[in-house]
Structures are given as structure tokens and as C-alpha cells.
Amino acid sequence: MKNSIGLALTCMLACACTAPPPRSGTGSPGANPAPPMSPGPTGPAEPALRSGARLYRVDAQSSQIIVLVYRAGALANLGHNHVLALRPDRGWIESAAPISGSSFYVQVPLERVIVDDAALRRQEGADFAGEIPEEAKQGTARNMLGEALLDASHYPLLVIRSAAIAAHGDTLTAIVHLSVAGHESNVSAQFKLEETATRLIASGQLDLRQSELGLKPFSIMLGALQVQDQMRIKFRIVATRG
Image (cartoon, rainbow, N blue to C red):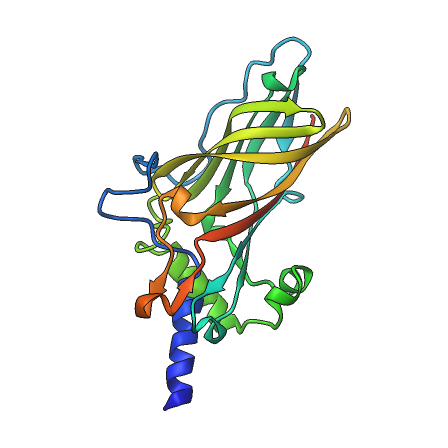
């Protein structure tokens, strides 16, 4: 009986690694409901380039966003941490001088999320030790994308676009507008930029709370079993000219 209870709790945590967005119309401060987006490629047209600017188109095969989700609570040892991998399917980066004149747009299809890939888990180290059974991966993805969570059938895209970009010495900072699960949020992200005549790479990482995105972290048993509000986001966006 004890083993059965432990297995059930573990499965509950595995199937709820991403928190459900509020469905009552109340989100976190500044997170306003947005109308459902239509499936498929959408978004703004490529910008009319200002003098001296360069336009790079996102390379979907070379770009990747990694989301690290952590267990928490007194019973956290019954679950495990998760690695989620996302790839954009469309986007562009306008590179201009000064950097404040630059802009970007990236859209990511949520249904293509890769859950707990063994190689990625090994890459992320001891916090993600051990392989996850395929059935558990599929259950996690199914529940994460379902109506009670990200509701990907109505909100199929994570949309990322720049609101402002600034340079402070060698540090670049972007105010990034995120649209996910019907919520709009602004976050600040520092990044590095590598640019040549034919390729541009923007990379960095940030810690982000689910509640900042209008999401409510999973929790049961008065918090004894829960998912941390804070996630770690790692990104590497590659874009090319031509």
C-alpha cells in the first residue's frame, strides 16, 4: 500500500510539472486575458528596415528554449525535476545601431514541446539525474498542454517579442513581451549577442516565476507536494540572413 501511494503521488507530480493558468479571469498583476490565437503561422510582418539595419530570420533547427522546472515541498523526493525543450517555428531579428533601434519576434508552437529528453537531462546535471519512462513523458506533455493547463488547442503558440532593448556596458537587456495561455506579461532578460554578416546568435538565461505569467504553481496536500513557482529559462536563438 505504501508503495502504491508513493507511485500515485509521483505520477501526479510528473503530470503537473507546468502549472494551470487561472480560468476564472483573474491572473497575476499585469497579466491580462487575451483572445485565443488561431493555430498555424501568425504574427507581424517583417519590419521595414531602417537605414543600416540588418534583418535575420530565425533558424528553427538551430534555435532552442530550455525550461527547467523543479519539485518542492516536504514530499518532493516522490517526484522529479523536469527539462522541457521548445523550438521556434518562425521569427525574425532586426539588428540596428544603436542597439535600442533593434527588435525581434519569435513564435513557438507549444504542441512540439519535448519533455525530459534523456540527453538534455544529462546535460543539465545532477538535479535531473535518471531517465523518465516514455509513458510518464507522454502523460506530462498531455496534461501540460490540456485545457486545464496551457490549453494549447486554443492558445497554440508562445509568442515572444521585444518591447525595448538597451545596452549597459557589455550587458544587453531586453524588455520582453510574452503571450502564453491567454495571458500577456512583460519580463526583463539579459542576453549576449554574437553577430556576423550572415548569422546572429542571441543567448542567455533567466529565472522566471510562473505567477509572473499568470500561471498558478501546482500544489497539493497543503503544499507538501508542489512545483516551485520559479523556473529557469535558457535560450539560444540563431538567425541567418538571406
